[in-house]
Length: 203
Figure (cartoon, rainbow, N blue to C red):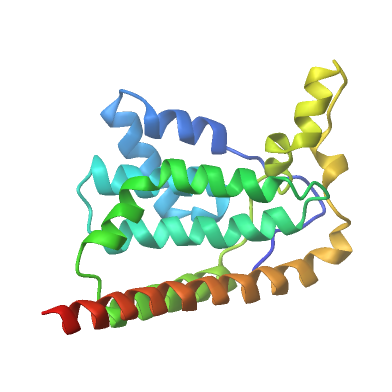
């Protein structure tokens, strides 16, 4: 898994990208679609989830393109959750994924998705993660966890960086995320294969 240098905090444009993708300006949306597709490593999972849905619903791009960014976002999101001391962020990642990517997930379960297409798709996701760095705020998920919520309720200052595990542990977390996502991808392929086999028996 490619990683950004930890010597300085990367400039994160994820918030403005999300606003542009959901916004009313087609020109600004197209600008950010191009920016994200050129440098996906500059944006966190939240952005990639939104991009996936916008590509499918607003731009009528092929399912494969939308699913690619959806799963890249999910894969990298797992890594960001593992880098957080607040493991309640795992639930928040799932909520973002399910709520934003609903149209793409619907297509996955409704259209005739081939096994070979999924295998190629996941192979591309894993290859991408090896070469594209994480040039976004590594602690972004911490703002969604219970620790941030409790701080807000108590009127306390919350620092996202304080909830990240030491940088020295990130490499191990990257391996953990890769293993976990490989299991997820295998389960998705298995599920599609079983649905096809069941449909063939009923035909």
